[in-house]
Amino acid sequence: MKKPIVFTLDDDPQVLRAVVRDLRNEFGKDFRIMSTTSAKEALASLTDLKNKNEAIALFLCDQRMPEMLGVDFLQQAKEVYPEAKRILLTAYSDTEAAIKAINEVQLDYYLMKPWDPPHERLYPALTDQLDEWQSSHVPDFQGIRIVGYQFSPRSHQIKDFLSGNLIPYQWLDYESSIAGQDLVAINHIEPKDLPAVFFEDGSFLLNPEIQQVGEKTGMNSKASKTMYDVTIIGAGPSGLAAAVYGGSEGLSTAVIEKRAPGGQAGTSSRIENYLGFPNGLSGSDLSRRAFSQATRFGVEFLSPQEVVSISVQDHYKIVQLADGSTLNTKSVIITTGVDYRTLEAIDVERFTGAGVYYGAATTEAHACRNSDVYVVGGGNSAGQAAMYLANFANRVLIVIRRKDLTATMSKYLIDQIAATKNIHILPETEIRQVYGDDRLAAIDVENIATGIKEKVNAAALFIFIGARPVTDWITLDIIKDEKGFIETGRELLKYESFKKSWKLNREPYLLETCSPGIFVAGDVRAGAMNRVASAVGEGAMAIKFVHQYLAEN
Ligand SMILES: Cc1cc2nc3c(=O)[nH]c(=O)nc-3n(C[C@H](O)[C@H](O)[C@H](O)COP(=O)(O)OP(=O)(O)OC[C@H]3O[C@@H](n4cnc5c(N)ncnc54)[C@H](O)[C@@H]3O)c2cc1C
Image 1 (spheres, rainbow, N blue to C red):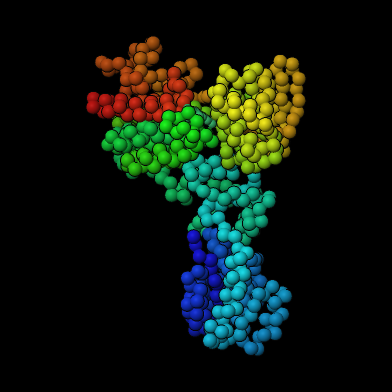
Image 2 (image 1 turned 45 degrees about the horizontal axis):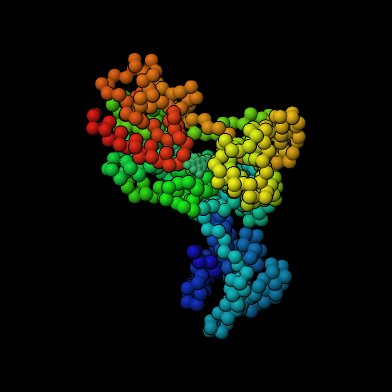
Protein backbone atom coordinates (compact mmCIF):
# COMPACT_ATOMS: atom_id res chain seq x y z
CA MET A 1 0.00 0.00 0.00
CA LYS A 2 1.45 3.35 -1.04
CA LYS A 3 1.76 6.01 1.67
CA PRO A 4 -0.32 9.16 1.12
CA ILE A 5 1.65 12.30 0.30
CA VAL A 6 2.27 15.54 2.16
CA PHE A 7 3.24 18.00 -0.55
CA THR A 8 5.24 21.07 0.44
CA LEU A 9 6.22 24.06 -1.65
CA ASP A 10 8.51 27.02 -0.94
CA ASP A 11 10.70 28.99 -3.37
CA ASP A 12 13.44 29.44 -0.75
CA PRO A 13 15.54 26.22 -0.80
CA GLN A 14 16.77 26.76 2.75
CA VAL A 15 13.28 27.15 4.19
CA LEU A 16 12.08 24.19 2.11
CA ARG A 17 14.88 21.98 3.50
CA ALA A 18 13.90 22.92 7.03
CA VAL A 19 10.17 22.21 6.44
CA VAL A 20 10.94 18.87 4.83
CA ARG A 21 13.26 17.87 7.70
CA ASP A 22 10.60 18.67 10.30
CA LEU A 23 7.82 16.97 8.33
CA ARG A 24 9.88 13.81 7.85
CA ASN A 25 10.75 13.64 11.54
CA GLU A 26 7.15 13.80 12.65
CA PHE A 27 5.10 12.35 9.80
CA GLY A 28 7.61 10.32 7.71
CA LYS A 29 6.40 7.02 9.14
CA ASP A 30 2.88 7.36 7.72
CA PHE A 31 3.28 9.86 4.90
CA ARG A 32 5.59 10.44 1.96
CA ILE A 33 6.97 13.97 1.97
CA MET A 34 7.29 15.54 -1.48
CA SER A 35 8.75 18.99 -2.04
CA THR A 36 9.68 21.48 -4.73
CA THR A 37 10.74 25.12 -5.03
CA SER A 38 8.76 25.69 -8.24
CA ALA A 39 5.00 26.17 -8.21
CA LYS A 40 4.77 25.49 -11.95
CA GLU A 41 6.70 22.24 -11.59
CA ALA A 42 4.44 21.29 -8.69
CA LEU A 43 1.29 21.88 -10.73
CA ALA A 44 2.66 19.84 -13.64
CA SER A 45 3.43 16.91 -11.34
CA LEU A 46 -0.10 16.83 -9.86
CA THR A 47 -1.67 15.36 -13.03
CA ASP A 48 0.99 12.67 -13.12
CA LEU A 49 0.36 11.83 -9.45
CA LYS A 50 -3.39 11.69 -10.06
CA ASN A 51 -2.86 9.36 -13.05
CA LYS A 52 -0.76 7.11 -10.82
CA ASN A 53 -3.62 7.10 -8.33
CA GLU A 54 -1.45 8.62 -5.59
CA ALA A 55 -3.31 10.17 -2.65
CA ILE A 56 -2.28 13.65 -1.48
CA ALA A 57 -3.33 14.33 2.10
CA LEU A 58 -2.08 17.87 2.53
CA PHE A 59 -0.51 20.80 0.69
CA LEU A 60 1.74 23.04 2.75
CA CYS A 61 2.57 26.04 0.60
CA ASP A 62 4.44 29.32 0.99
CA GLN A 63 2.39 32.41 0.10
CA ARG A 64 5.09 34.60 -1.46
CA MET A 65 6.61 32.86 -4.48
CA PRO A 66 7.91 34.48 -7.70
CA GLU A 67 6.03 32.17 -10.09
CA MET A 68 2.65 32.54 -8.40
CA LEU A 69 1.15 33.26 -5.02
CA GLY A 70 0.57 30.37 -2.66
CA VAL A 71 -3.20 30.93 -2.66
CA ASP A 72 -3.26 30.75 -6.46
CA PHE A 73 -1.32 27.50 -6.38
CA LEU A 74 -3.73 26.05 -3.83
CA GLN A 75 -6.67 27.16 -5.94
CA GLN A 76 -5.33 25.22 -8.93
CA ALA A 77 -4.24 22.24 -6.83
CA LYS A 78 -7.80 22.02 -5.50
CA GLU A 79 -9.04 21.28 -9.03
CA VAL A 80 -6.94 18.10 -9.13
CA TYR A 81 -6.99 17.12 -5.43
CA PRO A 82 -10.16 18.68 -3.97
CA GLU A 83 -10.08 16.51 -0.85
CA ALA A 84 -6.47 17.37 0.19
CA LYS A 85 -6.00 19.73 3.14
CA ARG A 86 -4.66 23.17 2.16
CA ILE A 87 -2.34 25.04 4.49
CA LEU A 88 -0.62 28.32 3.75
CA LEU A 89 2.76 29.22 5.21
CA THR A 90 2.78 32.98 5.71
CA ALA A 91 4.96 35.76 6.98
CA TYR A 92 3.39 38.10 9.54
CA SER A 93 2.74 40.67 6.80
CA ASP A 94 0.67 38.17 4.79
CA THR A 95 -1.89 37.26 7.42
CA GLU A 96 -4.52 39.39 5.74
CA ALA A 97 -4.10 37.48 2.46
CA ALA A 98 -4.29 34.23 4.38
CA ILE A 99 -7.53 35.21 6.11
CA LYS A 100 -9.03 36.21 2.75
CA ALA A 101 -7.96 32.88 1.30
CA ILE A 102 -9.85 30.95 3.96
CA ASN A 103 -13.02 31.67 2.01
CA GLU A 104 -11.63 31.88 -1.50
CA VAL A 105 -9.76 28.59 -1.67
CA GLN A 106 -11.35 27.03 1.38
CA LEU A 107 -8.00 27.22 3.15
CA ASP A 108 -7.94 24.77 6.04
CA TYR A 109 -5.31 26.59 8.09
CA TYR A 110 -2.47 29.07 7.91
CA LEU A 111 0.84 28.89 9.78
CA MET A 112 3.23 31.66 10.58
CA LYS A 113 6.95 31.56 9.80
CA PRO A 114 9.15 30.79 11.66
CA TRP A 115 7.45 27.73 13.17
CA ASP A 116 10.03 26.97 15.86
CA PRO A 117 9.70 25.01 18.04
CA PRO A 118 7.83 22.65 15.67
CA HIS A 119 6.39 20.61 18.54
CA GLU A 120 4.38 23.63 19.53
CA ARG A 121 3.88 25.64 16.39
CA LEU A 122 3.81 23.15 13.50
CA TYR A 123 3.03 19.56 14.45
CA PRO A 124 -0.22 20.01 16.44
CA ALA A 125 -1.94 21.93 13.62
CA LEU A 126 -0.75 19.52 10.95
CA THR A 127 -1.63 16.45 13.04
CA ASP A 128 -5.19 17.74 13.40
CA GLN A 129 -5.51 18.31 9.68
CA LEU A 130 -4.00 14.94 8.76
CA ASP A 131 -6.23 13.11 11.27
CA GLU A 132 -9.26 14.78 9.76
CA TRP A 133 -8.14 13.85 6.24
CA GLN A 134 -7.51 10.22 7.31
CA SER A 135 -10.95 9.88 8.86
CA SER A 136 -12.76 10.78 5.65
CA HIS A 137 -10.29 9.26 3.19
CA VAL A 138 -11.31 6.03 1.45
CA PRO A 139 -8.14 4.47 -0.01
CA ASP A 140 -8.33 4.42 -3.80
CA PHE A 141 -8.14 1.24 -5.81
CA GLN A 142 -4.49 0.57 -6.67
CA GLY A 143 -4.04 -0.85 -10.15
CA ILE A 144 -5.29 -0.38 -13.68
CA ARG A 145 -8.26 1.95 -14.16
CA ILE A 146 -10.42 2.02 -17.28
CA VAL A 147 -12.55 5.06 -18.03
CA GLY A 148 -15.11 4.57 -20.78
CA TYR A 149 -18.72 4.22 -21.76
CA GLN A 150 -20.54 1.23 -20.25
CA PHE A 151 -21.80 -0.07 -23.56
CA SER A 152 -18.72 0.40 -25.69
CA PRO A 153 -17.50 -2.80 -27.40
CA ARG A 154 -13.84 -1.78 -26.94
CA SER A 155 -14.34 -1.19 -23.20
CA HIS A 156 -15.96 -4.61 -22.96
CA GLN A 157 -13.07 -6.21 -24.85
CA ILE A 158 -10.47 -4.65 -22.53
CA LYS A 159 -12.37 -5.57 -19.35
CA ASP A 160 -12.82 -9.11 -20.64
CA PHE A 161 -9.13 -9.39 -21.51
CA LEU A 162 -7.96 -8.13 -18.11
CA SER A 163 -10.36 -10.29 -16.11
CA GLY A 164 -9.52 -13.34 -18.24
CA ASN A 165 -5.85 -12.78 -17.42
CA LEU A 166 -6.70 -12.28 -13.73
CA ILE A 167 -5.38 -8.70 -13.77
CA PRO A 168 -7.37 -6.57 -11.31
CA TYR A 169 -8.80 -3.33 -12.67
CA GLN A 170 -11.25 -0.65 -11.69
CA TRP A 171 -14.01 0.27 -14.13
CA LEU A 172 -15.03 3.95 -14.10
CA ASP A 173 -18.13 4.59 -16.19
CA TYR A 174 -17.57 8.01 -17.77
CA GLU A 175 -21.25 8.87 -17.55
CA SER A 176 -21.61 8.25 -13.83
CA SER A 177 -18.16 8.29 -12.20
CA ILE A 178 -16.86 11.66 -10.98
CA ALA A 179 -13.38 10.14 -10.56
CA GLY A 180 -13.50 9.00 -14.21
CA GLN A 181 -14.64 12.43 -15.43
CA ASP A 182 -11.85 14.09 -13.38
CA LEU A 183 -9.20 11.86 -14.96
CA VAL A 184 -10.50 12.69 -18.44
CA ALA A 185 -10.61 16.43 -17.70
CA ILE A 186 -7.16 16.83 -16.12
CA ASN A 187 -5.56 14.89 -18.97
CA HIS A 188 -7.47 16.92 -21.61
CA ILE A 189 -8.89 13.72 -23.15
CA GLU A 190 -11.68 14.06 -25.70
CA PRO A 191 -14.59 11.81 -24.64
CA LYS A 192 -14.77 10.50 -28.21
CA ASP A 193 -11.29 8.96 -27.70
CA LEU A 194 -12.42 6.80 -24.76
CA PRO A 195 -11.88 4.22 -23.38
CA ALA A 196 -8.73 5.39 -21.61
CA VAL A 197 -6.69 2.82 -19.70
CA PHE A 198 -4.58 4.26 -16.85
CA PHE A 199 -1.65 2.22 -15.59
CA GLU A 200 0.05 2.33 -12.20
CA ASP A 201 3.05 4.21 -13.60
CA GLY A 202 0.75 7.14 -14.44
CA SER A 203 0.75 6.59 -18.20
CA PHE A 204 -2.42 5.96 -20.17
CA LEU A 205 -3.53 4.57 -23.53
CA LEU A 206 -6.52 5.80 -25.51
CA ASN A 207 -8.79 3.28 -27.20
CA PRO A 208 -6.00 0.66 -27.17
CA GLU A 209 -5.86 -2.76 -28.81
CA ILE A 210 -5.59 -5.59 -26.27
CA GLN A 211 -2.06 -6.32 -27.50
CA GLN A 212 -1.03 -2.82 -26.36
CA VAL A 213 -2.68 -3.35 -22.98
CA GLY A 214 -0.94 -6.76 -22.75
CA GLU A 215 2.46 -5.19 -23.44
CA LYS A 216 1.93 -2.48 -20.82
CA THR A 217 0.98 -5.06 -18.20
CA GLY A 218 4.22 -6.94 -18.78
CA MET A 219 2.73 -9.90 -20.64
CA ASN A 220 5.08 -11.71 -22.94
CA SER A 221 4.21 -11.91 -26.62
CA LYS A 222 7.67 -12.69 -28.07
CA ALA A 223 9.34 -16.11 -28.29
CA SER A 224 12.71 -16.36 -26.53
CA LYS A 225 14.02 -19.54 -28.22
CA THR A 226 14.93 -20.24 -31.83
CA MET A 227 13.39 -23.75 -31.72
CA TYR A 228 10.87 -25.50 -29.43
CA ASP A 229 10.18 -29.22 -29.04
CA VAL A 230 6.46 -28.53 -28.94
CA THR A 231 4.27 -25.49 -29.51
CA ILE A 232 0.72 -25.51 -28.22
CA ILE A 233 -1.79 -23.23 -29.91
CA GLY A 234 -4.54 -22.16 -27.50
CA ALA A 235 -4.49 -22.18 -23.69
CA GLY A 236 -7.89 -23.64 -22.86
CA PRO A 237 -8.02 -26.70 -20.58
CA SER A 238 -6.49 -29.00 -23.20
CA GLY A 239 -3.68 -26.55 -24.08
CA LEU A 240 -2.93 -25.97 -20.40
CA ALA A 241 -2.84 -29.71 -19.69
CA ALA A 242 -0.50 -30.28 -22.64
CA ALA A 243 1.67 -27.43 -21.31
CA VAL A 244 1.91 -28.94 -17.80
CA TYR A 245 2.81 -32.38 -19.16
CA GLY A 246 5.19 -30.99 -21.83
CA GLY A 247 7.01 -28.82 -19.29
CA SER A 248 7.12 -31.46 -16.58
CA GLU A 249 8.52 -34.05 -18.99
CA GLY A 250 11.39 -31.82 -20.02
CA LEU A 251 10.21 -30.71 -23.46
CA SER A 252 10.95 -27.11 -24.38
CA THR A 253 7.36 -25.95 -24.61
CA ALA A 254 5.69 -22.77 -25.86
CA VAL A 255 2.00 -21.93 -25.52
CA ILE A 256 0.41 -19.25 -27.69
CA GLU A 257 -2.89 -17.77 -26.57
CA LYS A 258 -4.78 -15.00 -28.32
CA ARG A 259 -6.93 -13.88 -25.39
CA ALA A 260 -6.52 -15.34 -21.90
CA PRO A 261 -5.57 -18.72 -20.41
CA GLY A 262 -8.61 -20.85 -19.60
CA GLY A 263 -10.46 -20.77 -22.92
CA GLN A 264 -14.19 -21.44 -22.67
CA ALA A 265 -13.77 -23.00 -19.25
CA GLY A 266 -12.15 -19.78 -18.05
CA THR A 267 -15.46 -17.99 -18.62
CA SER A 268 -17.44 -20.51 -16.56
CA SER A 269 -18.63 -19.18 -13.21
CA ARG A 270 -18.74 -22.70 -11.70
CA ILE A 271 -17.61 -26.05 -13.08
CA GLU A 272 -19.38 -28.58 -10.90
CA ASN A 273 -18.33 -31.87 -12.46
CA TYR A 274 -14.54 -31.66 -12.62
CA LEU A 275 -12.93 -34.57 -10.80
CA GLY A 276 -11.63 -33.82 -7.32
CA PHE A 277 -13.58 -30.61 -6.65
CA PRO A 278 -16.76 -31.71 -4.83
CA ASN A 279 -17.93 -28.11 -4.36
CA GLY A 280 -17.10 -27.16 -7.94
CA LEU A 281 -14.57 -24.54 -8.92
CA SER A 282 -14.68 -21.45 -11.05
CA GLY A 283 -13.13 -21.50 -14.50
CA SER A 284 -10.79 -18.65 -13.58
CA ASP A 285 -9.56 -20.58 -10.53
CA LEU A 286 -8.86 -23.66 -12.65
CA SER A 287 -6.98 -21.57 -15.25
CA ARG A 288 -4.97 -19.70 -12.62
CA ARG A 289 -3.83 -22.95 -11.01
CA ALA A 290 -2.98 -24.60 -14.34
CA PHE A 291 -1.18 -21.51 -15.61
CA SER A 292 1.05 -21.27 -12.53
CA GLN A 293 1.67 -25.03 -12.61
CA ALA A 294 2.82 -24.85 -16.24
CA THR A 295 4.95 -21.76 -15.62
CA ARG A 296 6.64 -23.54 -12.71
CA PHE A 297 7.71 -26.25 -15.17
CA GLY A 298 9.38 -23.64 -17.39
CA VAL A 299 6.69 -23.42 -20.07
CA GLU A 300 6.82 -20.18 -22.05
CA PHE A 301 3.49 -18.39 -22.59
CA LEU A 302 3.10 -15.95 -25.46
CA SER A 303 -0.05 -13.95 -24.79
CA PRO A 304 -1.89 -12.06 -26.12
CA GLN A 305 -0.67 -13.44 -29.43
CA GLU A 306 -2.64 -15.02 -32.25
CA VAL A 307 -1.50 -17.77 -34.59
CA VAL A 308 -2.50 -17.02 -38.18
CA SER A 309 -1.04 -20.04 -39.98
CA ILE A 310 1.28 -23.04 -39.77
CA SER A 311 3.61 -24.24 -42.51
CA VAL A 312 5.86 -27.28 -42.69
CA GLN A 313 9.48 -27.27 -43.82
CA ASP A 314 11.14 -30.72 -43.81
CA HIS A 315 10.41 -32.02 -40.30
CA TYR A 316 10.09 -28.54 -38.83
CA LYS A 317 6.94 -26.51 -38.38
CA ILE A 318 6.83 -22.74 -38.71
CA VAL A 319 4.13 -21.01 -36.74
CA GLN A 320 3.19 -17.60 -38.11
CA LEU A 321 1.95 -15.04 -35.58
CA ALA A 322 -0.42 -12.10 -36.12
CA ASP A 323 2.31 -9.53 -35.41
CA GLY A 324 4.29 -10.87 -38.38
CA SER A 325 6.86 -12.81 -36.34
CA THR A 326 7.37 -16.58 -36.60
CA LEU A 327 8.21 -19.38 -34.21
CA ASN A 328 10.06 -22.60 -35.14
CA THR A 329 9.06 -25.85 -33.55
CA LYS A 330 9.51 -29.60 -34.02
CA SER A 331 5.89 -30.43 -33.24
CA VAL A 332 2.57 -28.63 -32.76
CA ILE A 333 -0.54 -29.33 -30.70
CA ILE A 334 -3.61 -27.46 -31.90
CA THR A 335 -5.99 -26.79 -29.01
CA THR A 336 -7.94 -23.81 -30.38
CA GLY A 337 -11.32 -25.10 -29.17
CA VAL A 338 -14.66 -23.76 -30.31
CA ASP A 339 -16.47 -20.44 -30.51
CA TYR A 340 -20.17 -19.72 -30.37
CA ARG A 341 -22.09 -19.51 -33.62
CA THR A 342 -23.44 -16.04 -34.33
CA LEU A 343 -27.12 -15.42 -33.71
CA GLU A 344 -29.11 -14.82 -36.87
CA ALA A 345 -31.37 -11.93 -35.98
CA ILE A 346 -31.70 -8.53 -37.62
CA ASP A 347 -29.16 -5.93 -36.34
CA VAL A 348 -27.46 -8.29 -33.89
CA GLU A 349 -24.02 -7.42 -35.22
CA ARG A 350 -24.54 -3.70 -34.55
CA PHE A 351 -24.89 -4.32 -30.81
CA THR A 352 -22.22 -6.99 -30.30
CA GLY A 353 -20.24 -5.81 -27.25
CA ALA A 354 -22.90 -3.15 -26.56
CA GLY A 355 -25.54 -5.31 -24.88
CA VAL A 356 -25.14 -8.42 -27.06
CA TYR A 357 -22.45 -10.78 -25.79
CA TYR A 358 -21.20 -14.16 -26.95
CA GLY A 359 -20.36 -16.40 -24.00
CA ALA A 360 -20.55 -15.72 -20.31
CA ALA A 361 -19.34 -12.07 -20.24
CA THR A 362 -19.23 -12.11 -16.44
CA THR A 363 -17.63 -8.66 -16.61
CA GLU A 364 -20.96 -7.20 -17.71
CA ALA A 365 -23.12 -8.89 -15.07
CA HIS A 366 -23.07 -5.89 -12.69
CA ALA A 367 -24.40 -3.62 -15.43
CA CYS A 368 -27.54 -5.81 -15.62
CA ARG A 369 -28.64 -4.96 -12.10
CA ASN A 370 -32.42 -4.60 -11.80
CA SER A 371 -33.14 -5.19 -15.48
CA ASP A 372 -34.34 -8.07 -17.65
CA VAL A 373 -31.68 -10.01 -19.52
CA TYR A 374 -32.01 -12.82 -22.07
CA VAL A 375 -29.84 -15.91 -22.42
CA VAL A 376 -30.05 -17.73 -25.75
CA GLY A 377 -29.29 -21.48 -25.75
CA GLY A 378 -30.16 -24.60 -23.81
CA GLY A 379 -26.76 -26.13 -23.03
CA ASN A 380 -24.86 -26.25 -19.75
CA SER A 381 -22.96 -23.10 -20.54
CA ALA A 382 -26.24 -21.18 -20.98
CA GLY A 383 -27.55 -22.70 -17.74
CA GLN A 384 -24.48 -21.69 -15.75
CA ALA A 385 -24.61 -18.16 -17.14
CA ALA A 386 -28.31 -17.85 -16.26
CA MET A 387 -27.59 -18.95 -12.67
CA TYR A 388 -24.81 -16.38 -12.38
CA LEU A 389 -26.81 -13.54 -13.95
CA ALA A 390 -29.77 -14.26 -11.66
CA ASN A 391 -27.66 -12.79 -8.83
CA PHE A 392 -27.75 -9.38 -10.52
CA ALA A 393 -30.64 -9.09 -12.97
CA ASN A 394 -34.28 -8.53 -12.17
CA ARG A 395 -35.26 -11.48 -14.39
CA VAL A 396 -33.23 -13.86 -16.55
CA LEU A 397 -35.16 -15.31 -19.50
CA ILE A 398 -33.71 -18.36 -21.24
CA VAL A 399 -34.70 -18.56 -24.90
CA ILE A 400 -34.72 -22.09 -26.38
CA ARG A 401 -36.06 -23.63 -29.57
CA ARG A 402 -36.97 -26.94 -27.94
CA LYS A 403 -39.93 -27.60 -25.63
CA ASP A 404 -37.68 -27.96 -22.56
CA LEU A 405 -34.08 -28.32 -21.40
CA THR A 406 -33.98 -32.06 -20.70
CA ALA A 407 -32.15 -33.11 -23.86
CA THR A 408 -29.49 -30.40 -23.72
CA MET A 409 -28.70 -29.54 -20.08
CA SER A 410 -27.43 -31.54 -17.08
CA LYS A 411 -30.07 -32.44 -14.52
CA TYR A 412 -28.31 -30.67 -11.65
CA LEU A 413 -28.49 -27.37 -13.56
CA ILE A 414 -32.12 -27.89 -14.59
CA ASP A 415 -32.93 -28.40 -10.89
CA GLN A 416 -31.00 -25.30 -9.83
CA ILE A 417 -32.77 -23.21 -12.48
CA ALA A 418 -36.18 -24.52 -11.43
CA ALA A 419 -35.41 -23.48 -7.85
CA THR A 420 -34.34 -19.95 -8.82
CA LYS A 421 -37.34 -17.63 -8.78
CA ASN A 422 -36.09 -14.97 -11.19
CA ILE A 423 -35.11 -17.37 -14.01
CA HIS A 424 -37.79 -18.14 -16.59
CA ILE A 425 -37.71 -20.40 -19.64
CA LEU A 426 -39.16 -19.25 -22.97
CA PRO A 427 -39.60 -22.59 -24.83
CA GLU A 428 -40.09 -22.88 -28.61
CA THR A 429 -38.90 -19.31 -29.02
CA GLU A 430 -36.52 -17.49 -31.36
CA ILE A 431 -35.17 -13.96 -31.42
CA ARG A 432 -35.94 -12.16 -34.68
CA GLN A 433 -34.61 -8.62 -34.31
CA VAL A 434 -32.78 -6.45 -31.79
CA TYR A 435 -33.23 -2.68 -31.19
CA GLY A 436 -31.51 0.22 -29.47
CA ASP A 437 -29.61 3.47 -30.04
CA ASP A 438 -26.02 3.19 -28.86
CA ARG A 439 -26.78 -0.02 -26.87
CA LEU A 440 -29.27 -2.84 -26.86
CA ALA A 441 -32.67 -1.83 -25.49
CA ALA A 442 -35.26 -4.30 -26.82
CA ILE A 443 -35.70 -7.51 -28.79
CA ASP A 444 -38.39 -9.25 -30.83
CA VAL A 445 -39.17 -12.74 -29.52
CA GLU A 446 -41.32 -15.09 -31.56
CA ASN A 447 -43.01 -18.24 -30.36
CA ILE A 448 -42.33 -20.66 -33.23
CA ALA A 449 -45.29 -22.88 -32.31
CA THR A 450 -47.91 -20.10 -32.33
CA GLY A 451 -46.17 -17.53 -34.55
CA ILE A 452 -46.90 -14.80 -31.98
CA LYS A 453 -44.23 -12.10 -31.97
CA GLU A 454 -43.61 -9.62 -29.15
CA LYS A 455 -41.21 -6.72 -28.64
CA VAL A 456 -39.78 -6.79 -25.10
CA ASN A 457 -37.26 -4.66 -23.18
CA ALA A 458 -33.85 -6.33 -22.83
CA ALA A 459 -30.78 -4.82 -21.14
CA ALA A 460 -28.52 -7.58 -22.43
CA LEU A 461 -28.51 -10.68 -24.57
CA PHE A 462 -26.04 -13.47 -23.79
CA ILE A 463 -25.67 -15.93 -26.65
CA PHE A 464 -24.68 -19.58 -26.18
CA ILE A 465 -25.70 -21.31 -29.38
CA GLY A 466 -23.75 -24.20 -30.76
CA ALA A 467 -20.10 -24.61 -31.30
CA ARG A 468 -18.07 -23.55 -34.31
CA PRO A 469 -14.53 -24.99 -34.43
CA VAL A 470 -11.79 -22.37 -34.47
CA THR A 471 -10.02 -23.74 -37.55
CA ASP A 472 -10.56 -21.07 -40.24
CA TRP A 473 -7.04 -19.79 -39.63
CA ILE A 474 -5.40 -23.09 -40.67
CA THR A 475 -4.22 -22.68 -44.26
CA LEU A 476 -2.19 -25.90 -44.20
CA ASP A 477 -3.90 -28.76 -46.03
CA ILE A 478 -5.28 -30.51 -42.94
CA ILE A 479 -8.26 -32.84 -43.19
CA LYS A 480 -11.36 -31.53 -41.39
CA ASP A 481 -14.89 -32.95 -41.21
CA GLU A 482 -17.82 -31.24 -42.93
CA LYS A 483 -18.30 -28.90 -39.93
CA GLY A 484 -14.64 -27.87 -39.80
CA PHE A 485 -13.48 -30.03 -36.83
CA ILE A 486 -10.02 -31.54 -37.37
CA GLU A 487 -9.82 -35.27 -38.07
CA THR A 488 -7.16 -37.34 -36.31
CA GLY A 489 -5.86 -40.90 -35.95
CA ARG A 490 -7.62 -43.83 -37.59
CA GLU A 491 -10.57 -41.63 -38.62
CA LEU A 492 -8.27 -40.24 -41.32
CA LEU A 493 -8.09 -43.61 -43.06
CA LYS A 494 -11.55 -43.12 -44.53
CA TYR A 495 -10.41 -40.05 -46.52
CA GLU A 496 -9.09 -40.63 -50.08
CA SER A 497 -6.91 -37.52 -49.85
CA PHE A 498 -5.22 -38.96 -46.75
CA LYS A 499 -4.26 -42.16 -48.53
CA LYS A 500 -2.57 -40.10 -51.23
CA SER A 501 -0.68 -37.69 -48.95
CA TRP A 502 0.43 -39.84 -45.96
CA LYS A 503 3.94 -41.11 -46.70
CA LEU A 504 5.01 -42.72 -43.40
CA ASN A 505 5.04 -46.47 -42.92
CA ARG A 506 3.00 -46.19 -39.74
CA GLU A 507 -0.56 -45.11 -39.15
CA PRO A 508 -1.19 -41.66 -37.64
CA TYR A 509 -1.19 -41.64 -33.83
CA LEU A 510 -4.52 -41.32 -32.05
CA LEU A 511 -4.44 -37.49 -31.86
CA GLU A 512 -2.26 -36.87 -34.93
CA THR A 513 -3.58 -34.98 -37.96
CA CYS A 514 -2.82 -35.91 -41.57
CA SER A 515 0.35 -33.80 -41.23
CA PRO A 516 2.94 -35.81 -39.17
CA GLY A 517 3.94 -34.08 -35.92
CA ILE A 518 0.87 -31.84 -35.83
CA PHE A 519 -1.53 -33.05 -33.13
CA VAL A 520 -4.98 -31.92 -32.01
CA ALA A 521 -6.61 -32.07 -28.59
CA GLY A 522 -9.85 -30.86 -27.00
CA ASP A 523 -13.03 -29.44 -28.47
CA VAL A 524 -11.51 -28.56 -31.85
CA ARG A 525 -10.95 -32.26 -32.63
CA ALA A 526 -13.62 -34.14 -34.60
CA GLY A 527 -15.37 -36.49 -32.18
CA ALA A 528 -14.32 -34.61 -29.01
CA MET A 529 -16.46 -34.86 -25.88
CA ASN A 530 -16.80 -31.11 -25.12
CA ARG A 531 -15.96 -31.46 -21.46
CA VAL A 532 -13.21 -29.95 -19.34
CA ALA A 533 -12.03 -33.39 -18.19
CA SER A 534 -11.84 -34.84 -21.70
CA ALA A 535 -10.03 -31.75 -23.01
CA VAL A 536 -7.52 -32.06 -20.15
CA GLY A 537 -7.12 -35.79 -20.80
CA GLU A 538 -6.48 -35.28 -24.51
CA GLY A 539 -3.99 -32.48 -23.82
CA ALA A 540 -2.00 -34.80 -21.57
CA MET A 541 -2.23 -37.68 -24.08
CA ALA A 542 -1.00 -35.49 -26.93
CA ILE A 543 2.33 -35.01 -25.15
CA LYS A 544 2.82 -38.80 -25.08
CA PHE A 545 2.48 -38.84 -28.89
CA VAL A 546 4.79 -35.84 -29.23
CA HIS A 547 7.50 -37.91 -27.45
CA GLN A 548 6.98 -40.79 -29.87
CA TYR A 549 7.08 -38.46 -32.86
CA LEU A 550 10.25 -36.69 -31.66
CA ALA A 551 11.93 -40.06 -31.13
CA GLU A 552 11.34 -40.89 -34.82
CA ASN A 553 12.94 -37.72 -36.18
C1 LIG B 1 -19.70 -21.09 -19.91
C2 LIG B 1 -19.20 -22.50 -20.07
C3 LIG B 1 -19.37 -23.42 -19.05
C4 LIG B 1 -18.89 -24.72 -19.18
N1 LIG B 1 -19.05 -25.58 -18.12
C5 LIG B 1 -18.55 -26.82 -18.20
C6 LIG B 1 -18.66 -27.70 -17.08
O1 LIG B 1 -19.23 -27.35 -16.04
N2 LIG B 1 -18.09 -28.94 -17.20
C7 LIG B 1 -17.45 -29.35 -18.33
O2 LIG B 1 -16.93 -30.45 -18.35
N3 LIG B 1 -17.35 -28.54 -19.42
C8 LIG B 1 -17.89 -27.29 -19.38
N4 LIG B 1 -17.80 -26.46 -20.47
C9 LIG B 1 -17.12 -26.96 -21.70
C10 LIG B 1 -15.59 -26.82 -21.54
O3 LIG B 1 -15.28 -25.54 -21.06
C11 LIG B 1 -14.89 -27.08 -22.86
O4 LIG B 1 -15.17 -28.40 -23.26
C12 LIG B 1 -13.37 -26.91 -22.73
O5 LIG B 1 -13.06 -25.59 -22.35
C13 LIG B 1 -12.65 -27.23 -24.04
O6 LIG B 1 -11.30 -26.94 -23.86
P1 LIG B 1 -10.31 -26.69 -25.09
O7 LIG B 1 -8.98 -26.46 -24.48
O8 LIG B 1 -10.44 -27.79 -26.06
O9 LIG B 1 -10.81 -25.39 -25.85
P2 LIG B 1 -11.23 -23.94 -25.38
O10 LIG B 1 -11.63 -23.94 -23.96
O11 LIG B 1 -12.22 -23.49 -26.40
O12 LIG B 1 -9.89 -23.09 -25.52
C14 LIG B 1 -9.34 -22.72 -26.77
C15 LIG B 1 -8.34 -21.60 -26.58
O13 LIG B 1 -7.64 -21.37 -27.79
C16 LIG B 1 -7.47 -19.98 -28.00
N5 LIG B 1 -7.29 -19.74 -29.43
C17 LIG B 1 -8.19 -19.96 -30.43
N6 LIG B 1 -7.64 -19.66 -31.63
C18 LIG B 1 -6.38 -19.23 -31.39
C19 LIG B 1 -5.32 -18.79 -32.24
N7 LIG B 1 -5.45 -18.74 -33.57
N8 LIG B 1 -4.15 -18.39 -31.66
C20 LIG B 1 -3.99 -18.47 -30.32
N9 LIG B 1 -4.97 -18.88 -29.47
C21 LIG B 1 -6.14 -19.28 -30.00
C22 LIG B 1 -8.77 -19.39 -27.46
O14 LIG B 1 -8.62 -18.01 -27.14
C23 LIG B 1 -9.01 -20.26 -26.23
O15 LIG B 1 -8.40 -19.72 -25.08
C24 LIG B 1 -18.26 -25.15 -20.38
C25 LIG B 1 -18.13 -24.23 -21.43
C26 LIG B 1 -18.59 -22.93 -21.29
C27 LIG B 1 -18.43 -21.96 -22.41
